[in-house]
Every structure is written in structure tokens, then in C-alpha cells.
Length: 123
Length: 123
DNA sequence: TCATCCTACAACCATCCGGTTGCATGTCAA
DNA sequence: TTGACATGCAACCGGATGGTTGTAGGATGA
Image (cartoon, rainbow over all chains, first blue to last red; front, side, top):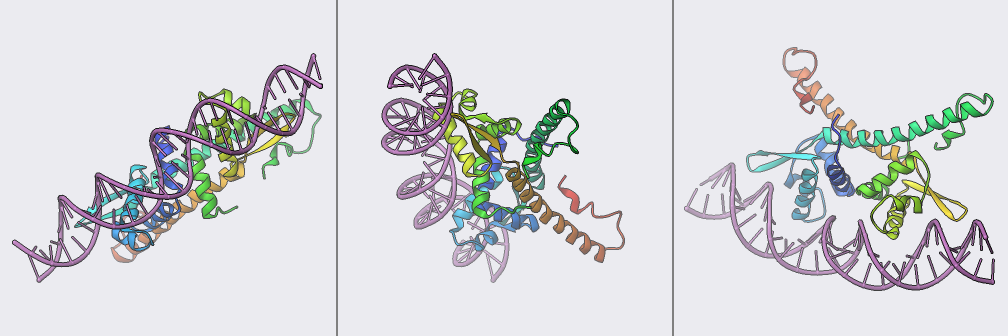
């Protein structure tokens, strides 16, 4: 499991913080597309789309492959997984906190019901 | 499973695209902290940290609860899960593409080995 | 009441970001 | 070779962002 450094994490979240870029990722996840093909899908100028693609590429979310005069972009699934893993790790922190509270409650009060509905306040 | 609208997704990814803010989330995920306590952890000014907290709150990643004269911040785990789910959904797109290619290959060539090592190029 | 602490917010500044237009380069097909 | 298409990049612009300092208000405790 590849761990994201701070710089990379900054870049990846930054890259995903734009709906056009998220949409591009969605599209090239399904099939590789040239920059022109992508540009045709949006209202903005070709250059704008090209810049979005560049941002995604710098963040490692997509990569390009030359085919003739086109540059076909495809998603880098592993990087998406890395982000997901990072969030999993965060959630893990929370879970361990819940466990800690559980233990605390178990040690104090007389046997309550099941296990920690008090700590399970977050949906 | 709560689905993120584009505006919310923009805000959440944006909020996470800063290492200080990610660190704040990590901390308040483990235990609720007042803004002052958080501010003490970083080099920057109190106001800067307070603004970071405000960004996280606007994005729905944390919420605050008044306790006396302090404002204790705690993480909103559900929102973190929403982001993770969004990435899962993306990965799902990719998986379905792989399945599609699998089916294509199965229909064409004579029985190859197991299933699609050709499509499994992405780690 | 009054000094103190915690928080919020406004104003300001440098930089970044998302968009534009224009130009240069590369590759293909006649 | 030449025209057309695909891409990349620089320059520019307005608005957002991340930081600063300063001011003000609410809650606490003596």
C-alpha cells in the first residue's frame, strides 16, 4: 500500500477539488481519451481543459500515452486507491478512539448493555 | 450512504488539500480540542488556525460545541466516510471497465488463462 | 465589577487558481 | 512540401486563499 507524502496529498486533494477535474477522472477511468476528445465535452476553452489535464497528471491521478499525434489520458487507479487508503487510515484513528472510550466505560460503570452506544453517537 | 453534491465535494476536497487542516482533522478525530489548544500546536498565528477550523467547519468535516468559554472541535466521521465512498464509486467505474474488457476478451480469443491478466495492468 | 481568556472577524497583502487569447511545435495525410 | 489537426505553453486577468495584525465581544473567576 503506497503511502502519500504531504506534498503528494496536497496535490491530489487539490486536483480533486474541482468538479471538472473529477469529471475528467471519471471519464478516463472508463476509457482513455485524448485531450481534444475531453475538451469537446466541456464549455470552456481547449487550453483550460488542457491545463486541468496537466494538473491531474502532475498530481499523479492520470497519465498520458502518445498515440500518433494524440495524447491519450487514462486514470491511474493506484493513486485513487492511495487517497482512499488515507481516508481509511483517518477513520481508523476515530475507531481506535471509540475502542479506547469503550474500554474506559467497561472499566468504570457496572455492566451496561451490549457495547458503547454512548460512543457511537456519530451515525 | 450520503452522496456528496458537487458543491460539497468541492468544499471537502478543497478543505483536505492543506496539510495543516488534515492534521487538525487527525487531532480532533482522536479527541475534541478547543481552538486555542489547536492553535498552540502550530507555528502560525491564532487567527490563521481559527480560519482553518472555519474552513473545515464550512466543509462539514468538523463541528464545534461550546463548553464554557471554549469552543471544542470534533471531527464529523460521516463526512469523511462520504468522501471515501465517492472514491470507492470511482474505483467501481474502473472495475466495471475491466469487467467489460474481460467479457470482450472472453468472447473473442480461444479460452485464455484464468481471467484477464491483460486488463489487470494497473497494479 | 474588572481583568483575563477564548473566540470571531475585518482589513490588508502576496500568491495561487481557473479561465481567457495567442503563438509555437509536432505529426499526419495529400 | 504543405495544410490541417493536436498539443503545449506563455502572458494576462479577476477572484479565491493563506497568512498577517488589530479590534471587539462573550464567559469566567477573583
